[in-house]
Image (cartoon, rainbow, N blue to C red):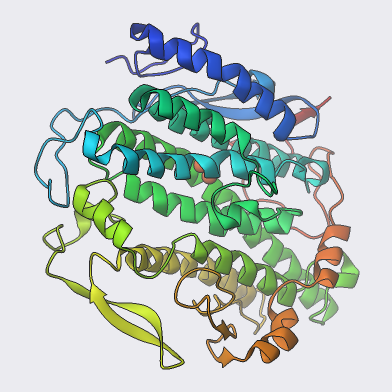
Length: 472
Ligand SMILES: [Fe+2]
Ligand SMILES: [Fe+2]
């Protein structure tokens, strides 16, 4: 197998695309539609070029190049992690059998559905973020936005490759639909709720990349375990790129909190809005919103579909190979979150049926890591205030808690109380208008907006004041 992509080809890849003329032609005919979509639904800020990372390889010693490229000419390629010839299925009823190189007929519909749902989120986030370039707090941040955007575009390519290569005519139709649905559209919205929400400002962007992209990381982690080897290898490689998206969110919120803390100390007051920054209570409200809509992405606490996916080997658990059990779970039980006699509690279900909860818990403990970091920034600044993750019952639209209202500390509320109090916990129009009013573009090298601290490090060892983006 050749590990390095041939850049003379139209579609950079490490899947020996040139050996399959039919597939190559199918992808080549999808490519102009993709580019049309990128032009009409992608970033709106005109640029000459951007200092971007481009995936070129899957090997250990360097898998990406950095350089200034025109975004339209970005080489969206198809890369799968290297094949392990010996790979065996790690869980479910096929555990121990060789991983599948073709789609088994009986699982075709389910696998296609899983790929389409994952694929749909990738262009959705590009659409949600398309106007953010107009208000970037620095060239460094602008570059990171575009890096996330082109890689989400590449993730769409990754899913479309699987649809074209393994799912025939239906797969090709689904690939077209991925360009046809649009975030927030009335007639053809994206499949999942959080991907139809707006990302209207940079605080939302950082919250989105922290909380919602992190959901993506966990979903990819389960698909990486899949018995269907091409899907597993595709997701393994996508996770590499995803690490940068996590970094953008984590350090983005770090820097907002750092700047807010600095102004709180300097001015000896909690409300820093008059100093061109975002007060901690507003940061907490944005966090509450993005965390709760991201929890909804994990689906219901219990799911027989997901139990069936697991048993069939389509979708595993987070870190499946590190789990110390039989990897079949047919006799196991677990506690899942539930509303019991009007109270927030837990109920026992079969472990298979509770897999959504299992994944969501791994995600929640990961999110706690972010809150810890941000609280350390407050602590280091000498401030007593702290940020928190709200209760899993707070502001939910999916699962056991959709039917009730709850405060961030998990107290159940009547509909009336919720209506009265929700403005204390979720961004109000006033909050959003203020955050929006701070969003002025800063395109001068080495300069930064008033509401955020500069990053500690640049990209690829370049300094913060590097010319990351040339505007046109
Ligand atoms: Fe992605
Ligand atoms: Fe991402």
